[in-house]
Image 1 (cartoon, rainbow, N blue to C red):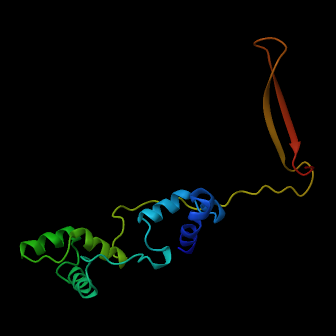
Image 2 (cartoon, one colour; image 1 turned 45 degrees about the horizontal axis):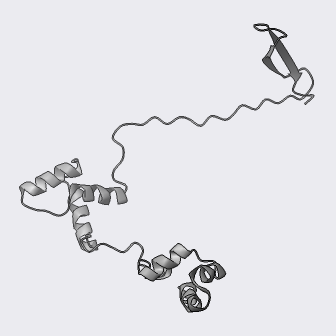
Image 3 (cartoon, rainbow, N blue to C red; image 1 turned 180 degrees about the vertical axis):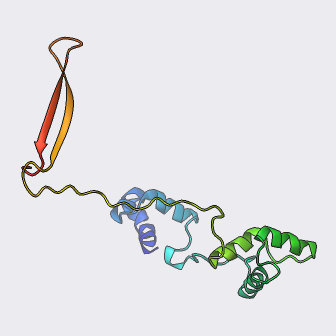
Length: 160
């Protein structure tokens, strides 16, 4: 913010381009700020403010109690939502019910997901010569077309 005000003071003397380059501010940033699209500095912005239609803590508590009640203990939030609508009660959307349950870690994947076990990478250790060898085969072009040579290499790992 102070840089932008500094640019504003320098513009009558040096122009926009020179003023922005003196204070190491991109000209596009100054233009957006000057046009009013950037009004508040980043420190004063309200990050993560609650929307006006968000449920307050008492409403969230009421939804949690209903979802965890004995009547709805084995039903999904969609089924609870439908049952409450049949009784002409609307607390929140079924998606909000899922969010509340997710926040309390009451929702998980329905299917049993297999996890790949963590295998240890094998370590080949040679404590002496002729215990462990590494090999490779490479195809080399020959002197004429269609003629190839195979190069076989065996290396003792202990000597390397």
